[in-house]
Every structure is written in C-alpha cells, then in structure tokens.
Length: 169
Picture 1 (cartoon, rainbow, N blue to C red):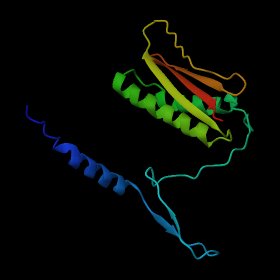
Picture 2: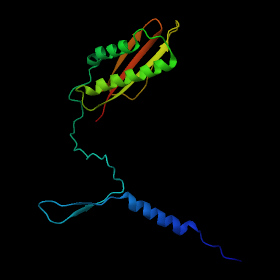
Picture 3: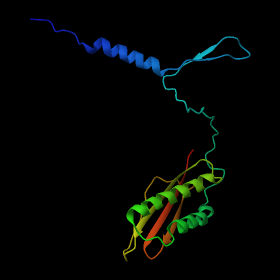
Picture 4: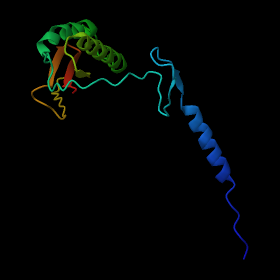
C-alpha cells in the first residue's frame, strides 16, 4: 500500500497567516520625560479612530430627562416646511421623509439630554380615505426612555414622525 502524500498548502497557509498578523500589529515607542526607558505597546486590533476608555461614573439615571415637548414645536415646523402642499409621489416623498428624519435627529442631538440615543423615523402615505395604524415595539424603561410623535396632513398625503429617546447607561 502506498503512503499518502502531505498537503501542499500546509506550509503556505502557515506562512501567509503569520505575515498577515505581523502587518496588523503596530509597535509604538513612547519616551516619557520622567523616565528614559522606552515603553513598547502593540495591539492586533488597533484602529486609527480609537477613543480611550472612559472611567465609570456609576450614574444610573440622566441628569436631564428627555422632554418631548421641547422637540415637538421644532419637529412640527420641519414637517410643515418639508411637506407643505407637496403632492404624493413615492420616490420624492421617500427622499423628503429621510431628510426630515435626519433633521429631527440632528436637532435632538443638539439638545442638553446627555447619554440618550435617538431613533427618528418618518412614515409617509397617500391619502385615499383609508384608515392607517402605525405601531412600534421595543424593550422600554418607563422611568428613563421617552418618545415623541409628529403628525402632518394635507389633502394629498399624511406623514407621521416618530422619535424615540433611549437612555444609554
């Protein structure tokens, strides 16, 4: 009986793997003013946009709770400006809805509510005498999380904007 020969790729795979790992690490030499010895640090998961880890504050609640009535007026203004007397067209309304959602989201992020993450969504539909119900479900903390609903209607279309403010510990 003849012997089986070894795999051709066995040696190649090992060499390519070690070369790839060598290229992913980065060695940094730092010279401290107090000490003359260099400190070497390396990581295989180094990213250029890395932000340092922040210390825990052990704060369990927000300093300022999200208050929807502060966003309501500006949100309604944005909806009125964007949709106005716009006639329903599927492609055009989708772009306008995305722009309104982005504007409302940007306005929410400018406010003083720290540690909140926001989700903004605008739904647009053609008015044809139908009844529409929009629902959403999520895990929710009644004490910290909150939401806002914006409504707009003209003779051609309806638009419903929803903003969810979720506290991020």
